[in-house]
Image (cartoon, rainbow, N blue to C red):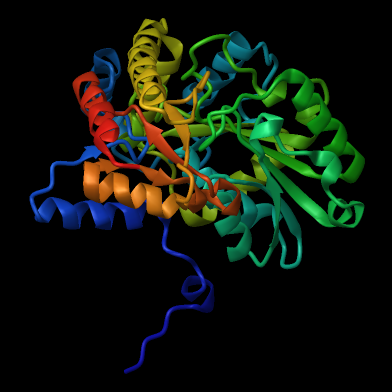
Length: 388
């Protein structure tokens, strides 16, 4: 019997991080000591009060049945309260303007199912989180890349979008603090996004997964800007903020029609997030945020060691003001894949070639600081020893 994958799967390039995982596994089988600075997966445990809330909730029989599709009313209310307190976005209706997600990646992937028809244009940052483009293509949409350039602060130039493309565009993806560039957006930029979206009747989908990992001023939400709730939805995740990547919990907030459309997809493809996890998430976002400040300080200390060390070694490093990522410009004569390959095979450092996030990432590799400080210091010494 001949079994063939669907064409949409056959045409899909290998998922960047799955490919990196395979390479790491092979080198570890060979006995290589690897310092993994490739994937943004926090190495610290989830704060104890969140774990305790989960343990308590998991023992309650009421949470052992099917959850609600949209999320527990108490979780959605907690998310609305979080947006009011953290961003000043007040008056979100938890019933109509908030939906629980099984991690923000799930919501980001399912959003085009609700709103992208074959032939629709979706404006996608390049480099950018691969899921934006992948699910656009899954739904038969056409990706129009918005190049993020260093000389423009890694912000897209919306004025460069041809009017004929903008007229056909259905969705615009934005992501600040940005992965992989670690760039930040300003409220002025968000205001220009709103004006662009309203001019061309484009949905804005904002990915705010890294909003709480910052080293200076707290980054704004797109929804803070007047008019944003007319055209936008924002995806938020507890994964990075509270070291909860394995818990798979997040939420989306914004325009009721957009939240409702996503919710309608979810009622047909999943049965909601485990309510004990939602109870733990309530504890996370409703409690004092001292644990988050501790997490930020840890990343900042690590980042200072990494950036200072690599710059002293002669590398061109783009220091972040947010996220736990930094970009290193490739040494002259190297592609991103070649530079990342030498870091892996000769220095035992797992780095992510930034062109895995799109052609616009060529010229850089991305490093995280999701490793203990002694390993960060060792990584710096290993890079210094490379003959590049």
